[in-house]
Length: 282
Image 1 (cartoon, one colour):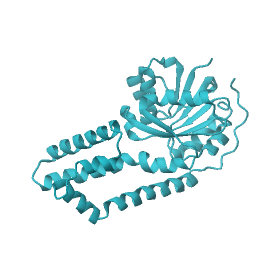
Image 2 (cartoon, rainbow, N blue to C red; image 1 turned 90 degrees about the vertical axis):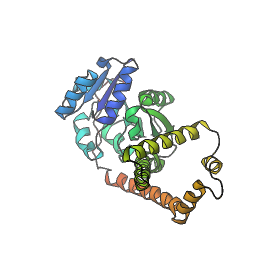
Image 3 (cartoon, rainbow, N blue to C red; image 1 turned 135 degrees about the vertical axis):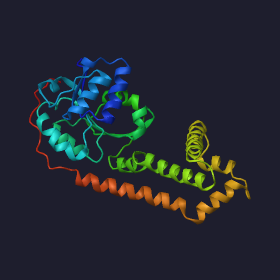
Image 4 (cartoon, rainbow, N blue to C red; image 1 turned 60 degrees about the horizontal axis):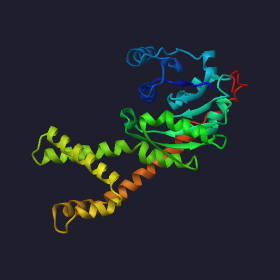
């Protein structure tokens, strides 16, 4: 069975996946990468030993799975020269906002999986929401999970619209975390600690709390209550947050991100012509 994987786009997310696949035993010869930006092609060659193509060619027809990893606004431009080469292949998109029907129309394949990863994927600690169109088989799903395994965890959703919520929660989530850490570091400095001390304390505390929550079978509210003694320091801090409306503000912020993800999905839904019949063998 053909085992070639093709990547359209060779940027940071693609590089994270490619690096993981190579570490897991994939050979460079089984990976095709199309990356028009010459400095990035040089980086792929230097760091991963991959010779990327500057533009698509007939070799793409060998691919059994195609990973779309270009910026969403460049999808139509990237897909056009691939038309007729990819219709037989499973399509995996890590592009934000591009709906699966646009990908199916552009590639000629109904076997489309959309993924919404996040930036910790770059160090193998990410989580990605996945949606599969009806034509995607159980074997296809397993292949997608294997390809994304080097980037972290995966969660399947039943409806494509659920990816807007995934985008808002985990896709944008690292930025929320960094925002909170910024505030903690500022508080540390206001209280007389150095920026370096505040950063180390804040990051270690957040990492430890996340690890504890992941290992515990109890809810975050129970874990919070266990370190909150009435009249104590944690109680004082949480009371101040509640008075400032921090909890509802976070919920409102995440819902705003969901709405924007929905809007971007409409903006990035290009009127692409249907791809011609594929020249590749199934």
